[in-house]
Image (tube, rainbow, N blue to C red):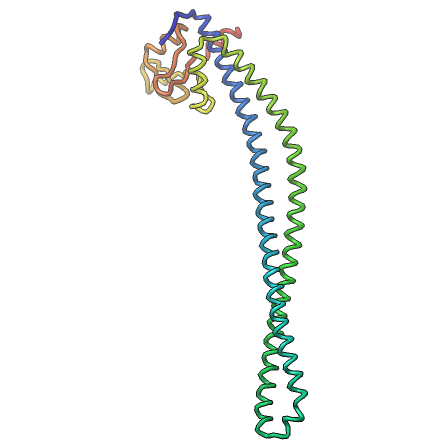
Length: 263
């Protein structure tokens, strides 16, 4: 509802201000998107660094596990080798007894097979340890390289953030100053529509004048393409009021207004 009657010149002035505010809003949005892109890059860096850190910790834990396993297997291998040495020392004594020597040979064969199996297991563990160490070194190099890149980019971002934030603040001050020149209810409502309609709160009207389809001239909102009622079109033509689309609630103006101004 209008608070007071406004003149055609005021309609033209207010519309001009709304268009300027919309352009400023668009610039502010662009700046904020640039900042968001930078922050996303930083978040990506942090995510990748955290991934590498987790991987490094995984390799360290696996290496500790393998080293402990290697120690246990090495002790088992040493124990069996010691047992083999002890048996070999008794070889001459046992050789005197045929029955004993058969048992001796079976035990010797078993111990040697066990030593071979344990040795193979030990070699497998050592290969796994070497593989883990290689992976750890490779991951560590990637982590350090990414960390250096991240720190450099973060410093640049901090400087750019200050500059862009300063530009946004200037534009917001200009926007606020311009909105103060129009009635408060229009300014508040226009600001709300800017946010709801993704920065497009005021649009021109278009003309449907194809004689094959329309016998008369019809005007439409270029924001939502709805054909506008006659009463609204007349108000726009006469600059009788600040008019909104009855469908999308965007503010409307006729493009010829500013062509007239330029002339």
